[in-house]
Length: 218
Image: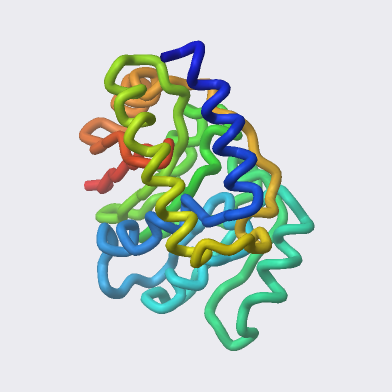
C-alpha cells in the first residue's frame, strides 16, 4: 500500500486542484464546540485568510490573528468587517505574539511549520488559567491504522469535493492560497511530544489527514 499510495495521492491532488474544498474549515464548527460560549481574548495562530478568527469574533471580546505571510494577512484584513473585534498582524507566533494571557488559543494546520514542542510551550505560556488550546494539525502516516484512515479519507475526500462544488470545477478558496508544507512528524511523535509539553492533552486522529489536540490549562 505504501508504494501505491503516492500514485493515488498524486491523482487526488490533480482532482483536488479543480475541485477544491478547505479541509481545515471542515473542523471549524467542531473547534467552536470545544470552546466556551463567551470569552474575552482569543489568539489564532497561523490565521491565514482569517476565516476562523472571524468565527471566534462571534464569541470573543477581541481576537488577534497572527501569520508569517504578509500577502495572506492583507487578504484577511480585506475580508474582515472593520467593525469586527479582530486584528491581524504579520509575525512569528513564537516571538511576536502580543502579550496575553488569552482565554482561547487556536492553531489550524500551522503547527507543523514550527518547532513542535517550542510552539506548544509558547501556547501554554500565553494561555490564561482556565483557558483552552485547540489545535488541528497534520501528520505523516506511518502505522497500519494511519493507512486505514487514509484509505477511508480518499473516497470521502472525493465525495466531499463533489458535494461542495456540486460536481463542477471551482476556483480555489482564499483560505487555500497560503503557502503549505508537508508534515514530517508521525502521529505517535505528536502524541509523545504533546504529552510532555501539555500533560493531560487529548489527541485524536481524524479524517482528511488531520489530528486534533485539546488542552485546558488548570
